[in-house]
Image (cartoon, rainbow, N blue to C red; front, side, top):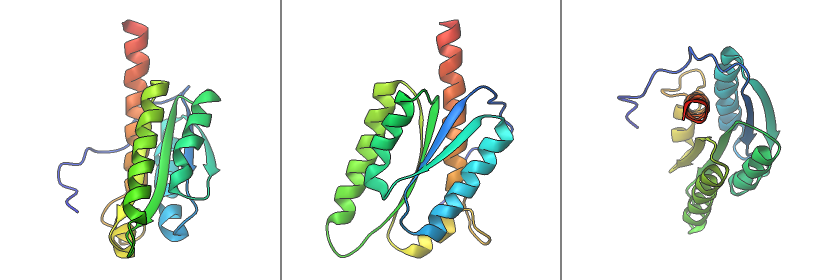
Length: 159
């Protein structure tokens, strides 16, 4: 985990944007930290924010798709997948990542990628924006979604 070169977050005026945060329910301490970081950035931006929870990371893509179908300008996808002793980690990580990419491209709208794929729980605690964490991936995912939504809005308005 480097963190070096990461862009600054915050300081965005995203008034008028509708953002849906879609979060899994596994590893609630880490996920709740991700949600708190995302919500902080989104609330500061002036965007309207809705939070929906899904059972796990595999379900993030279909919930993001539904959010876009419901009019969302951006989605922030938050989840946690921790490597275990079976190939399950690779399958779920790949399917969730590919699904979120497809949903974003199909909708032409951004999905802030806050899906942590981890070797162990400590890596998640280090990235969850909790007291003592080195990074705040929830805040970073929300910031990326907002900035990209604003770029897309500008491109569509100005050609």
